[in-house]
Image (cartoon, rainbow, N blue to C red):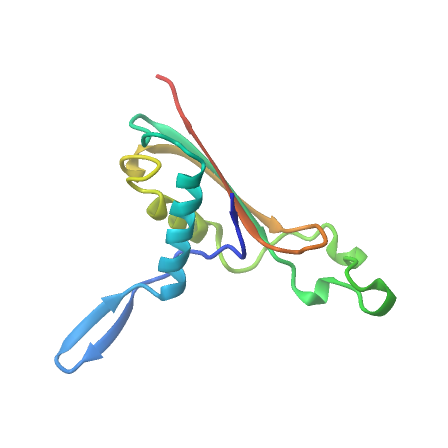
Length: 142
């Protein structure tokens, strides 16, 4: 589990420096990749998986303030938003790419080992309304 608002994988940025072009990843993306690595290593796993794996990713996105009531209903989710799916950006595939790239050579030798992948994003629920990413990796036996 990685607490905080989940960050999808970004696209490289380009900066011209005279006749040279510098290519870099946004700081937000590199910071979140590092956060995923640290969270995985903190779980105490010994070695990366070396065989075929499956990865299940659950992304809890923090709700916008418009989903909550005001005044005496502050902090309570409005009825019309209780069963709403997270059908907006960022996309599921960008979260998958973030996890596959961040945990490459940490949780598994190469992301090509992933033969089954599932991603689910949803609005977080609870009073803290904080986002989180839950990742489950398991080896698939032959």
